[in-house]
Image 1 (cartoon, rainbow, N blue to C red):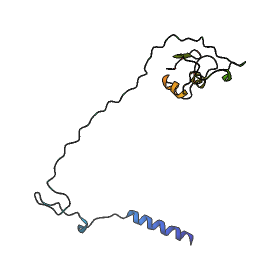
Image 2 (spheres, rainbow, N blue to C red):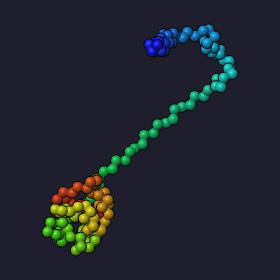
Image 3 (cartoon, rainbow, N blue to C red):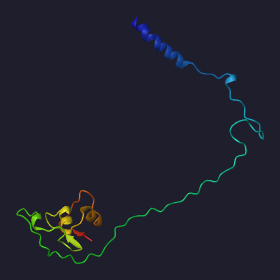
Image 4 (tube, one colour):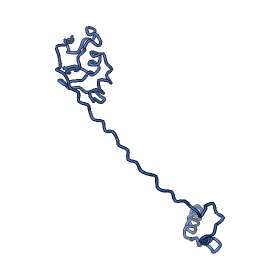
Length: 145
């Protein structure tokens, strides 16, 4: 009994897949209207050719890093540090460094330099073309203005 239930749908599917559709004469598409006559269709035979719209090429501005002359970096600014070499924020006033540029020392972070200069760290990163995570190298000169 189970075989007949399986066999019948498979045979029906096979038979329908093997048949072909042959259109009859009634199914054919009617012939097009004669040239010069107006058909009852939706399209008018008097079509106006429209020229293709002009193509404009837009110049893409390329941003180039602006090189600014950096004055002599004055690193006589004394930064109080703890025993591990990290800056002691309790002894440093925010915005106390007023130079145009700052040379990175051991233990400095962009957050610390922004604290010293009294600027936002994103602003300093933008001025120096730095991307997140803001990795600094010892001896790197950061432009602050």
